[in-house]
Image (cartoon, rainbow, N blue to C red):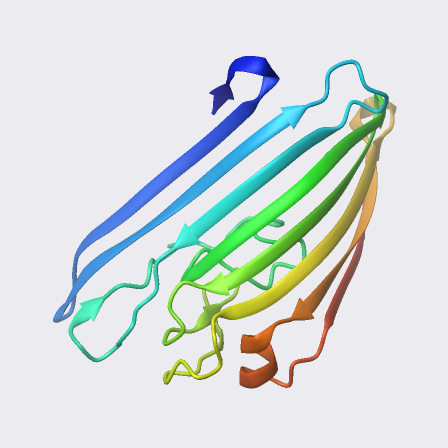
Length: 191
């Protein structure tokens, strides 16, 4: 995490897993990269950013080599989309977003997420690391789908915060073939 020339900012994280689990050898990795740009002296101080997350998958679960990255713990809210239906496991995730500071205590964000399976023979995993769907032949394709997120929050005196948002998942080829392929809505409010 840091600053780059011309006002850009960045963050990165990498993880590698090696060893064995039972009789399987483990070789997996994951990465997270963000590049942002806050527009100086603009109304509502927008910050644009692009993010890419990757976690390896396993092509063949019976070959004695485990390639699926194990995220170890459930992912935090809104890590790979506000609806929390995708985890950091067998996934390629691309996010573009813009954050606005409407006032000193009022923020809003618009995000677009797109997902692909890292390996079409492995499963789609949710934020708790559970299997959502699997097509072991790989015939359902890699494109999972996309999500649009809208969020806002307002901070009152004494650190009381009120917020809300809405996320909508548009199923891609994989979800259309491996599940009923229904869109998913995620509205929320918080205090």
